[in-house]
Length: 209
Image 1: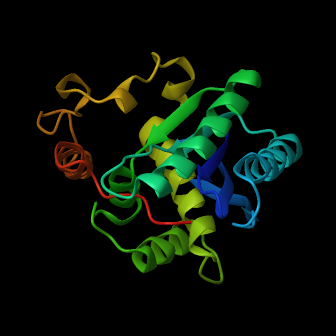
Image 2: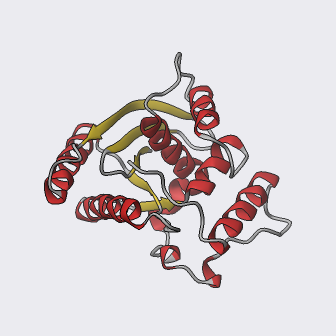
């Protein structure tokens, strides 16, 4: 299965493509960042990002698309642009009839590092190890997109191809992941706890891009 992970951002949008053979076996295919200048009109910036996304999807033909789920806390201007880019990704996946996975920053951090509070450096280091890269993935936006793709491979995988529509981005107690149960691994419990905490407290506002 080929997974395209997207770290949405107006100034820098990260695209990371990996292949997975099931389990935890993942392999790097491509990583890149599409940039748009802040002085351009918003619709022109979105066009640049959309064109970059189309190019990646045409070249690598992913089977699944995964994107960071956007949360807002205080920086409304930043989150608005990030949400607009995420919308472009969601639309592209729908037009290509591809399943879409959405993962919060805490979920991604917990999946690749074991901690929902990991910093960017820790994420980069773990992505490098997981994908057996000779150097740290840079810039951070590219590393984040690969981490999102890895999370989809490990948390979603083939099941996402037949999943019910994802309504968790709308919030609500019913969308909180289960944090206890004999069928959950320790890693799953760790992620679920971090996820529940982030949603209850509004999560961390996305960084400015």
